[in-house]
Image 1 (cartoon, one colour):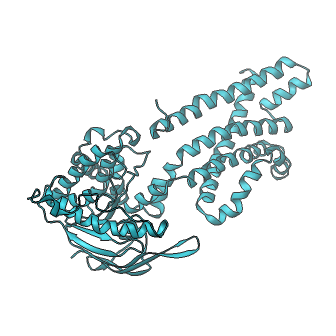
Image 2 (cartoon, helix red, strand yellow):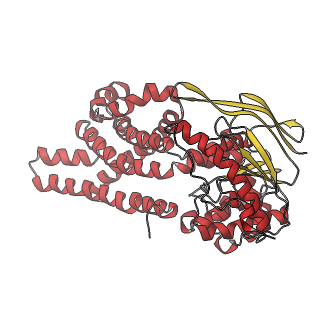
Image 3 (cartoon, rainbow over the protein chains, first blue to last red):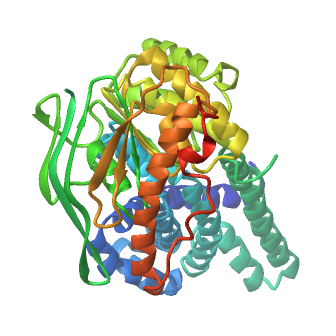
Length: 206
Length: 279
């Protein structure tokens, strides 16, 4: 048997990865749609930032009613919490593609789906990566909120058990683990990814 | 005759007002010809070029390529812009291959043709570099290779050397001349520099101030390869310059107070003053 905190950490990581993955897909699609359509920009676009200020925990009651007291409710909250930061970043990325690049691509024969695949998508990669970095922190917060309130296996539950048994060392240890995991993922994955993209584009010198 | 522009009119909306930028433009570009468009700024020469590229539509008039109405962007017409407009996420070679990839050319053939054109602009050593690693002049060479690799019927260039320093500009002008002699593409070239226009072109079309119409088309009668100091080019340049300065005066008077005039007479534009020095 591995120590219980490792098991809890694994369960929590699994939730956040699933939730974050879904948020990445949703946020990128949403950002692309809003960035490319004037109608969506005027309707959903103005809401993106406003909705982003609603803490994802506020959606927990919705999640509980829809999914019940289980994993899916927690994942739902993670998705809600991290989709919007990605969408906002991708949207501004789409909007800031230099028009000259699009015109050059047009004269080289890129139209419709070709333009999307070979120009729009690669052009927003830095924005996606930047959005992911920001959203990762939101995802952790949402995960913890969900896990504290819905008692299942997970780091949040270990934290709450520490509170119940008045075991402060356990509480602080879990806080440290959460911090370390968040830091490790940001530093080892997202920052590396971002630096690589920015170097390749010449936005940052080696 | 390859490219024909007939009775083209174009208006733009500027602050709610309709401003005419092109008026009754008629122009014919012959197969394999190098034609330059010059004129005061804002005269619509870039607009005309955009129309030829299929990036813009005329409000009135027709554009025909080989007797067919000009089709949408792409399709045998490639444009080189003042900024190189390279894709920053692609290597130099991938940038050159971009258009071929859009046309679904197989990978092996793509890479072969790209390398061949990179050799043409002397950049084969940089095939795997990214655009940000290149200087301005090198980027513009890549942009030219990226256009030529498409083997276009029509190469459109919108002040391609306008953002470069004098030395780089002069080197690239010579290269373009060499490449054009080698490939004999039909080129329509927009520039602010009369020296550049007469150096490179078979004919130079001078536009009036807005609304732009073609004042005069000059034949450049000098054999290739040409050099900057060619006295014939100098004479022609001065002839165009004096006509152009009238247009610039007209333009400035519209934009500034009406008593503005260009100072004339100080510039040695009159060929009779040279008393034979240009023979």
